[in-house]
Length: 158
Image (cartoon, rainbow, N blue to C red; front, side, top):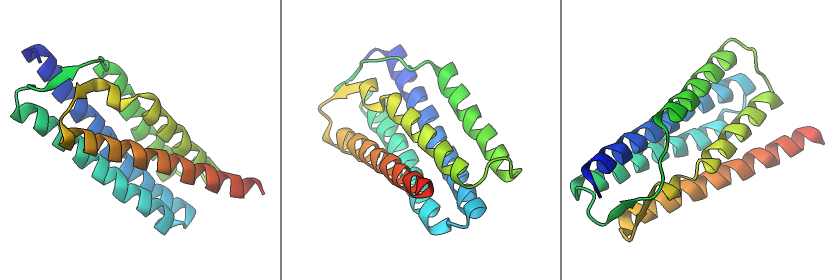
């Protein structure tokens, strides 16, 4: 991996980790706002893990100076910062009581879909098993979050 690509990838993974960390806080507040803390905290704990996973992936790349890793897709840092700001703004709405009940589950569903749509796995191509294991776990759990949220929203509809 070229040095400029190495830097870009590490920054991108750092921004993605920051986003996952922000989701932890948002989901904890959703738990307080809905009175469904156990449900939301289960997701929040995994978001914290996702942030750790992304930081560990960045460490694996830095530790090898990118050897064995190939940057396969750009993630515009500005878009990621805008997404992080959207999460911050959403947290403000939750704290102010502007979003309640089913709206919080719908908000989280929208965010989880957006995370999956960002296609994290497309950032890097590698045979590094540790990196791939962390990425696969993060994506699998995000897909589970989306499914959980869709099921909860469906219960509101009944």
